[in-house]
Image 1 (cartoon, rainbow, N blue to C red):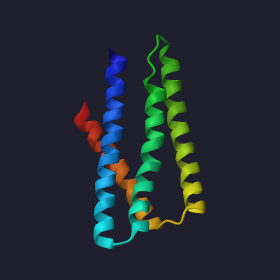
Image 2 (image 1 turned 60 degrees about the horizontal axis):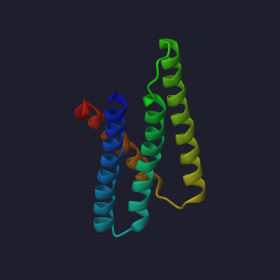
Image 3 (image 1 turned 90 degrees about the vertical axis):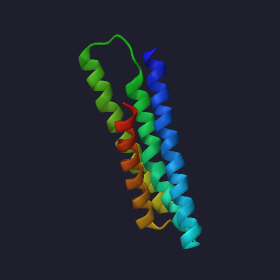
Length: 122
């Protein structure tokens, strides 16, 4: 029961972030008339949201473990999230033509939306 609730919360959070990022990218595409700006904004949000989804899945596996193992799992999931985010950031910056300012704005929007939604989903 707890795992189903946790998974529902994770997917609600992830798809809400994607929806808000798509709306924001659409507005930037409509007003800026530049698809590179909208794509950069969306990619920035995905770079934050994707590894966060993975980290939540790693933390959300419930088993009867010692508290030290649970804390260890939380630290490893955050470590994996940071490493994957850095790798994605470098890969996208190096191989995909993006507007870096809007990429960072998308990353920050993903961050703000996630922590705002976490407050409302509790």
